[in-house]
Amino acid sequence: MRTPRVAAIHDMSGFGRCSLTVAIPVLSAMGLQCCPLPTAFLSTHTGGFEGFSFLDMTDEMPRVAEHWKTLYLGFQCIYSGFLGSERQIQIVSDFIRDFREEDTVVVVDPVMGDHGTVYQTYTPAMCEGMVHLAEQADVIVPNLTEAALLLGVPYGELPTGENGCREIVERLSLDGRRSVVLTGASAAPELTGAMCFDAKTGRTKSVQVRRIPREFYGTGDVFASVLAGALVKGETLPDASRQAVEFVRACAERTAEQNLPIREGVDFEPLLGLLMGGRV
Ligand code: PXL
Image 1: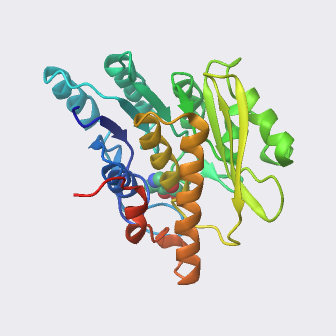
Image 2: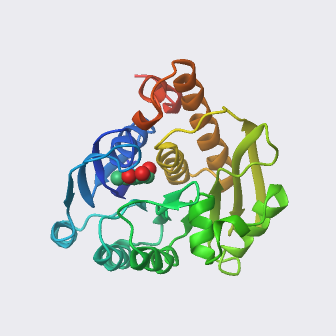
C-alpha cells in the first residue's frame, strides 16, 4: 500500500516546537507522508516570546495548491492549524473543496487562543472565519478557549466538569454531523485529558490521565498531530484520542522532570519511538 499522505496546513516556527516542527516528525514517526503547506514562517511561536519575525505566506499558498493540482496529488488527510491572515480562511476552505476525496479525513484544529486569551496575531475577523472553516471539518480539535470562541460564549461561562465538557462537545457537533475532540477537558482536579464526540457512532467518551501540574506551549499541536495520524491509520476516534492523550502526557512528564522552559515546548523528540510500530 502507498504510504498515506497528509497535507499539513500550519505555520513553520523556527524555534519553540509547535505547528509544522511538531506535525512533520510526529506524522513521519507514525509512518505517514507529511506534505507541508506553510501559512507563515516565524522565528519563534507567538507565546512567551517578543520581537518574533513573521513572514506571511498567504500569496504563496494558492500557487502551491495549483501546482499540486497539476500533479493530481491525493491526500488521505487534510490537517489545518495556525493561520497567518484572514484571507487564508478562504484559501484553506478552497483547498479542502478541491482536494477532499471519499477517503479523506479533514481535521481542522481551530487554533485561535489558549487560557482564555486570543493569540496576538489573531484578529476578530480571523476568529469569525475560523467558525466557518471548521464547518467543513470531519473532526475539530479545540481547546476550551477555542470551544468558547466557536460557541460564541465568554470563556468564563463555559459549562465545567465532565458533564460540562460532554455538553460542549455535543453543542459543537453541528447536530451530530461533526466529530469533536475537546482538549484540556478535565474530569477532576487531579486529572486531565480529552472529551470526544464521535459523529460515526453518536457517542461521547472521556479519556483521562493523571495531570502533570505544568502547562507547556505546543501540546495542542502534539495532540492534534497524533490524533490526525492515528485517524489516517484507521483508529476509531476514541482510540486515536487515547493515543494522543497518552503521548502528550508522556511528553509533558519528561519535560517537567527536566524543568525545561515552558516556551520551548515539550521535549517530544526522544519519545517519537513510542509512535513507531514496526522494526526495520
Ligand atoms: O500552538 C499553537 C501555535 C501555533 N503557531 C504559532 C503560535 C501558536 C501558539 O502560540 O504562536 C505561531
